[in-house]
Image (cartoon, helix red, strand yellow):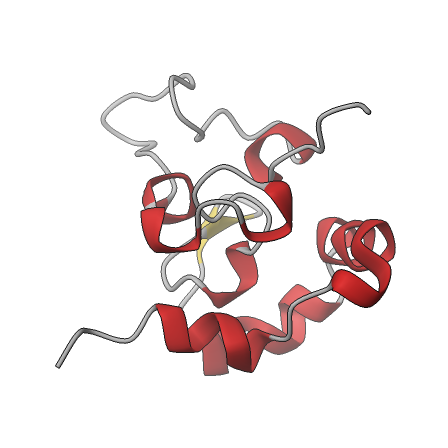
Length: 103
């Protein structure tokens, strides 16, 4: 079985682990969010980027989940993950629980 692409590979943004970055282009928070590692077979939050605040979408920093999710639902990568995962697609509410700070 072929490895599934993470968002930074699919979008070819250069902001994934080891990607081309400079002082203007930092690593995307999705590639550093380890609490979602393995979700939809992705590295860190690479296949659940829509629940991570501050991701770099279309070259702009996206805000918190509530502010960006509508745009994420229109993203071709989100649609690809949903299709590839089928009945195994994890709902955003389930993923957001994993991102809550420990109490």
